[in-house]
Image (cartoon, rainbow, N blue to C red; front, side, top):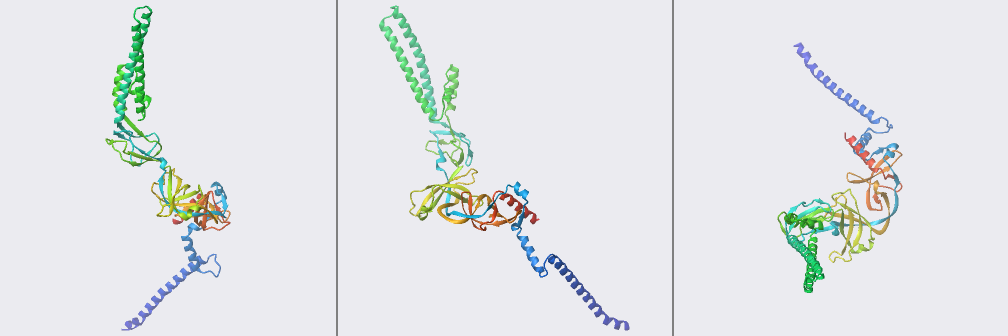
Amino acid sequence: MPGARDETPRRPVLEAARAGGVWLALVLATAALCGCARGDGTAGREPGGHAGDEGVDDGRHAGDEGHGPLEITRDAQQNAGMRFVAVGRSERPVPLRVTGVVTPDTSRVVHLRPLAEGVINRVDVTLGDRVRAGQTLVVYDNVALGDHIGEYLGAVASRRQAEANLEVRRRSFERAEQLIGLEAIAQQTLDLRRSEFEQARATLMSAHAEVSRVEERIHRFGLTDDDLREVAPPGAADALRDAAERHREASLNVLRAPFDGVVTEYGVAIGDLVTPERELLTITDISTVWVLADVYEPDLGRLPLDAEVTIQVDAYPDRLFAGRLTYVSDTIEVSTRAAHVRCVVANPDDLLKLGMFARVTIPTNETISALAAPVEAIQRIDDQPVVFVRTGVTTFERRDVALGVTAGGEVEVVAGLAAGESIVAAGSFYLKTALLHERIGHSH
């Protein structure tokens, strides 16, 4: 058929034309994209630049925004109280680094025991509690104190009886003196009355001595004169009966905290029978602690007396604790050929825990020329010590640094700075905050 002969050769032509149109469209689209990329990448660049270089720069800034320049106006610098110092070299002590352990100040550790045998009546604290000086810790029924209170009541009663007997003998003697003047009695009777009066007076003095003796025993258990007056008040028989009922309460003894501290050992419960040999509680004042370390024999001659040291612990890697070297042992451990040294460290926030492993940096009496920066210039970002270098009137740059020993308010800069560079001392925290704020902005 004529129509069939004409259709057969035209179909390949149409398919080829259609395929060619698709390829032409792809070529034009690719060219357009290249043109756009060239326009974005070469804007503001020299003719010899390459689009590929611009892509590399963008990648570098995107991953390094934390090290880019910071722009801080003069007004903001003034409001932040910024102070700038030039990094310089100075003679710094050569550091000696040793390891140690946090321990309590042994003069601020008290082991509380009962003064006598007794039964625990009340316990007001538990392990780990913070206590204040004078705070009640344990109340126990002191068996010995109860016995002494009984003796005291008996002694007081005997004294009152002696006082009454003395008054009777005094009146009898005075009457006898009157009657002898009237010759109504014999001299022998007067002498007898005088003897009875003197004997009654001696008995009262003995009763006073006995009361004082028992009082002193009771005072050793912590009771005061006011407490004793409540136990045995002067007055009528009703008051004495009330005092007898308070006898049981008077035998309760109280253990109080001798100073502010922490309950570091605990071994007591209500109802326990305790003796003076048994330790009930241990109170430790950890506001100041010791760090005990070992220094090898060859290094002992390099240690200055009363040196300022720095302490670091794993729990707070960005925190330096200031201490002072106060003692070097007079004996050397034979097995290690090292001497114990003691560093006293203030611990007002109770961050240093007893038993912590510590790294101690001790400045020796040897010196070396090194770069130094004020301690206040050092900030930490991502566990990395950094400073902020002033690169212009209003521009600053973060600089990672490696630090050495700290002494006298300055820290050795081992790497990261050059002599003469201007860094921010006071006000560096403001720059840290601004840098972190900018980082958060870039992350969004």
